[in-house]
Length: 402
Image 1 (cartoon, rainbow, N blue to C red):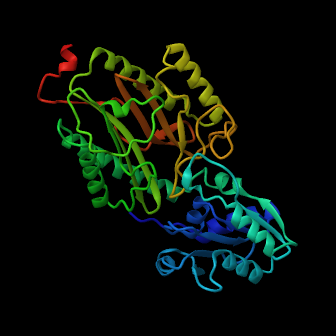
Image 2: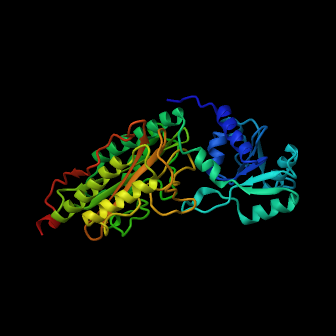
Image 3: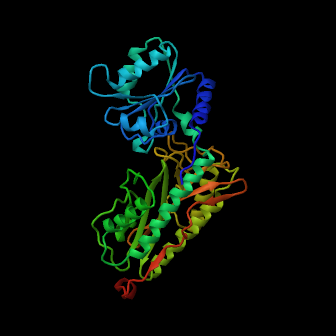
């Protein structure tokens, strides 16, 4: 299901933005920027040198440069390494001199985020580059690519649909596999195998690849990362299944839940709170609303229902290609690199709708579904149900009898 992406047009649009911002050349170190402009899977410390006019260059590890010359659409891919004249900073400086911007306006990407692999320029890199270009002006351009990638290209949406469908298929296979006595790692293995067979390239998340949690591991206060462990699934356990795939650099992320056997009355109460909140999130995400407005409405809804001790006051995060997995979140507060409450939802924007509803000692549930904003509303790309699956354990659970 490959699709053609016009990278030349994409880069030209971004270069037009640099020119509008008065930036002669950008040192793009963010993973999001590198992926969007190179079209390659770049896992090492790298950067793209993007002039407002001229050829884009990717500077990457010598260990990987040959592959990226072959797989990236960029022709200008150069290597850096631990050899004289091949230091990362030296290679950056060399390209800026080639472009003639020693005294120009140099853009950098400096910021903060909860998302670890963002790739902001380091203090060391920034200071060394400033030393090499004492007559240049430096301008922080960290927000440019964030904004540039919020609304997805039609081709990106097509690939996101496929990445999501791969995750959905793995969930269905996990549903057939789920039984008392299997481990979380075994569940993760089944999911990963299915997704690879269907074309997934990478279990991309830094929170543990395929996140699987059962029993007490689902209900930590305010959630948390749930990398699969050796814990054995028991009768009566809630099971949280959060699967991550990647198809042609676009990320699939679908979290769903199950209960091993009939839910207890208390578990059923938490399920109802979770399900109702999920549907309300979907209802609120409409074009013309701001992310802050959506978050305020949802927080008010949760408070009125009396679920504030269970439901996390954050209802989504960004999604797109490799490197775009966090910004912006659906929250009321302004938080640089994380939240942008004033952003107005517009067609083509994809938000990861998310709900975390945890009652310690009872059950925890997580929703993550890519949601596309359309002209008149929205569309969930995942076709899985919102309601948790009830898995027949083939036995009576002691928890229910008590």
